[in-house]
Amino acid sequence: FADLPLEIRLKIWEDTWPKPRVIEAESFWDQDSESSESSASSETNDFARLRFNRSISAWLQSDLGSREPRSLNPEIDSFERRPAPIALSICQESREHTLKKFTKMLHVHEPWSFYFNPTSDILLLSSESNDEETVGETLWQSYGRQLSELKTSIFTIEEWREDRMPDVLRYFGGISVIQILLEAY
Image 1 (tube, rainbow, N blue to C red):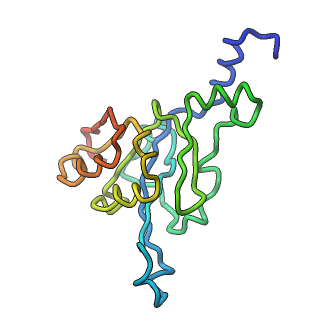
Image 2 (cartoon, helix red, strand yellow):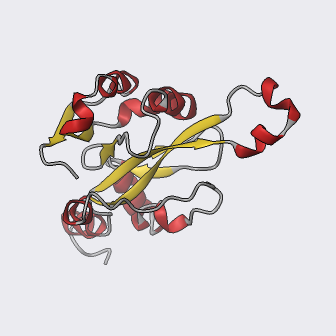
Image 3 (cartoon, rainbow, N blue to C red):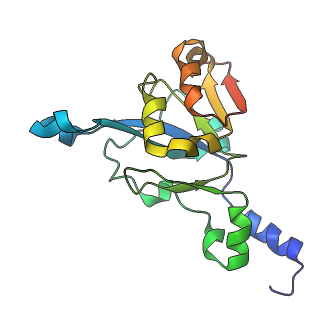
């Protein structure tokens, strides 16, 4: 393998990378703090995170009206939902090449980190699964400036027509492409 030209080796590493994916925002309510008497002293009772929904090709081929059920407990979600590109674990050359395209997104309140490709992965902000008035703010509290690494977002035309959705984008300073699905779910 080491005798192969560098260009061929790099192409092999790239072939192990995940296909472009849909990254979805989720909001959660901390049910434990609701039952505790000290909930008034906690900073916030809700939080948001990002997770992979599925590959873009699978997402576009699916019935967009039937949403995948989500766990309300972030501890239950399996690691398979956020696997790191395998090339990060093979050798130094594969890791260095992969880190040129993939960025690590760290969640500040829990160990919920993942690698994403800012040039090919797409952010889905859906009013169907989130409180869109606060999802931008709670994502900012969870990820901070890292949100500016996301470059592309997708909405349905109905969600875009709502006045609140464009306001959410102010938390994502790096968004340079907005895709709008003209057909409803």
